[in-house]
Length: 334
Image (cartoon, rainbow, N blue to C red; front, side, top):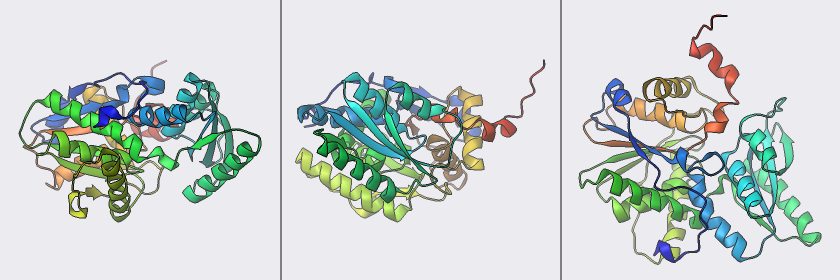
């Protein structure tokens, strides 16, 4: 049982399941709900808070004194890991990569506020290069007597995915229905998708899970998600059979990781102006753009209750002001 696994408590649960009637009407959906995991509360929120509650329990139990993570300059994972490390008096060592930057904004500003030490790879955010740099740094730390713990790129571990199972348990109680439901979510490193699929098998067996990729092909998502699910099943010692055909994802809504799309930006604006809910241009904006397109193409059923999982990422939005300024179409009188 999930309850048997050590867990620290960071977030505030259950997160709300917010009805979005104006957005639903504009999209032609009978009903739309937003699972507000951006409101998990800790360090700016997000679904990654659920995951790290299990990972940090393991980190503390094994007496690690340094926590390491890597990602793009605006990584949500790095932000929350840095905050959790500060909370438990651990050193945070982060490897970031990507375009050169001149301002410290969004998640990068928060990383610094939380006290993370950062090494930067200019114009290089390739996962294998970031992992190699983190591994080399970990070896340095070991030679100096430290006990570093390295989280994988994106932070997706089988242990962490257990936290996402609880999100589906919450949705089940909040909707309180046995009818078929379609759940849509952004997919990056696949840990959230794995947990949501397993949670659906356990608590919402009539639900359809639809993933919108922000960084990988559907084939790569399927492969990695099945790996994580297999590891989760081993942890839980549960015979939950998930096959390749059970994983439904769409990979046409991104160009490259971290780069905004016009459709994603428009989805951010539409969601803000209909429901007052803020998405981000890297994850949730692209996923909402995918949801909108799948409704238009009748791939999603407009008559079924639809749940959009808001996985967080709000701080990222504040680093994309130049991209949103021309789209906002607002004149400020002076």
